[in-house]
Image 1 (cartoon, helix red, strand yellow):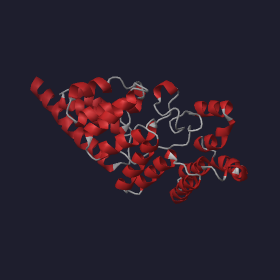
Image 2 (tube, one colour):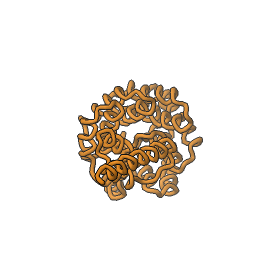
Image 3 (tube, one colour):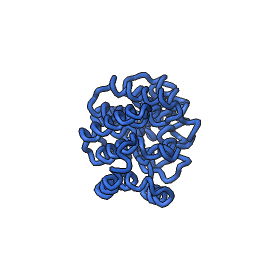
Length: 280
C-alpha cells in the first residue's frame, strides 16, 4: 500500500459537496493510504521521514513544489520507465495549478503502464479530476470507474464518484458510496458530511441531523456543509440553530451554494421574525 500512497488526487473545488481541510490523524482520513491532500503539514513531514521515496511528492503537497520537481528531475534516468513516476510529475503540476501539463503527464503515465503491459489506476483517477475541472463529466465518470475496475480497493475514485453522484442528483448512489467508505474510517468528517448531505437531499431529516451532529464543530463552517445542515434544521423548524449555522459559514466562490445559502437565510429570518411577532 505504501507504493500507492500520495499517488492519487481527489475532487478539490469541482464538487459542491466536499470538505477540504487538513486532517491531523489517519483515523479520521479514509484516504490516508492513498493521498496527501488532506494531510496536515506535520503528517506530511513525518511521512517524509518514514519513507524517503515519497520525498519529492511530499514536498509538492507541502507547498515546496520547486523542490519536489527538482528531486523528480534527479530521478528521471532511474524512473522514466515507471508509470508512478510520471503520475507524480503530473500531480506536482496539478498542485501548481498547471492543469494542461498535469493532464499530459497523467496520459504519459498511462502510456508507460501500457508499454509495460500493466494497468495503472491512480492516473485514471487523476485524469478524472482533470476532466471534472474541464466540465467533461462523462469522461470523468469513465476514468473513475476505470480506476475502480483495475483495483476495487482504491478509496479515492469511490470518494470522487460519491461526490459526482450528489452533484448530479443521484443521491441514493452517493449515499451508498459514502456508507461503503465509512466502513474504513467512520469518523472521517468528509464521509460524515457526505452521508448527512445525502440524507438531507433525500429528505430523511432525522438521519441527516444525526450525522451532522457527529461532525466535529470546526468543520461545520464549511459552506456546503453549513448550507445543507441549515436546510435540514429549517425543514425541522429549528430556525434559531439554522440561523446560527448559516451566519457562521465560511464564504464560497461556488455560486449555487452561496445563492442557496442566502435564500435560505432570508427564509429563516422571516420565520424568526414571525415567531417574535407571535409572542407580542
